[in-house]
Image (tube, rainbow over all chains, first blue to last red; front, side, top):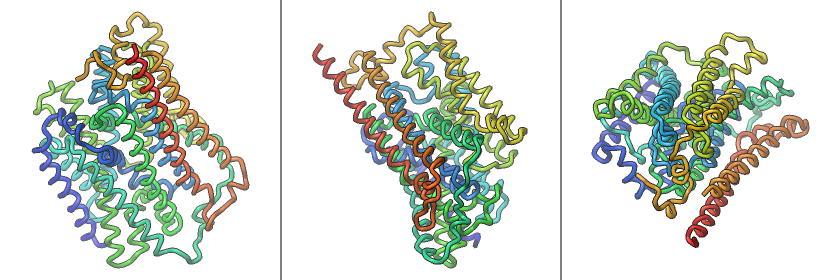
Length: 489
Length: 84
């Protein structure tokens, strides 16, 4: 493909993002702007913005690549990403909106009246955010390498610098419009090529039996891997650092539920297209089905199937969509992380926020440059497993169980982090088989383990149930109109 | 107050269980019924259609039903609170 196409598409997305980012400085200065926005943002805009921030490199590039590589079992990834929002709707959407917390550390501190809980939660949020940014930067490295011929590290560096600088300068803070635009950009970037490709290649004797084999029964270990992954995706979504703050632009808890329903609809439509890309890839470009190339499928397929200027246009479109994904997810995460880091470590000043933003972009850059990419969808799946094993039990029990104590929460988060993190680090050294499978997708046992620890320690620690628990739970669950007397920020 | 939390938690758990049973049932049928595994439409195995597009309607239906129940629970609580 011609590098001009790559340069043009990337430059356009970057310029648009930076311009809107800096223009937004004038519109939004403080976190309180989320509040002001809450009166004016329509649910559709809001839901688009949530979708725009959520759909990352894993969704835009990774899923199609994984379907190309692994076939049927990879179809569960988009189901998990979508159903994660269903769980978020069922268990946390409205209560978290009513909690008055901007970040998960804010929530755990307010709920458990403990600064130590806040510290542990903050550390986890930062670790999760960093490791969620890493695959975004690796996706950028891949995209730049393939589409322009520049060395791969240029792409990762470019995204880290752009996001770090824009966020530090004060842009990208509460700009619902930018993230909403990003959702529609990503949807268009995948949907239009899929439709054009299907129209182009329709008919003819397609080697479907080879491309989409009906596998004979899979082993129990494979079924475990898929099930555990699905479990991690279901529960991991609600603890992601950049998800909670978006719910603030909803006026109240009921609106938060409605917005989440729209998000589910948008995601359901979006994920049809990465899946279609994966299937087309299996039929027409089986040569890309190697671990190092598969993630590039979405970028390469339009040019392979449709020659000439139309192919170039479609390629430019998917490049723009992919780059939009890296920028929007990374900036959402960097904003959330910078807020947590500056509040907890740097005293909450504006200068602290800027330093934290730069740091939040550059630590993952170092990790991305020093490690080998191992499949975008797979890396993000492991982050979900870690979130599900650490923050999810505390969030769920904090919202629904009055017996939770600070010690219980800390014990559970530490056990979840050690067991899940340790498994992920150890897994590459083990062979396939049961032990390898249990460590490769640990969520199925680390989430129940962490939850059990939280409950047991809280029971033992019963006398330290926070005094304000009933008042706090009332605020979480009462509709705003009857929650008189319950203090609200 | 506790009755409202209990009702909302029940609604959420029922919805989650319905979803899990639905997905688990679909996965089980796909895994153990050979006729379903072998069936194709336009050359593409049915399994790919079901997993690629068929689960999302279930997600949306469960979500919509849950929202209706949760809103009703809140409305009932509100009317009780206004009476007292």
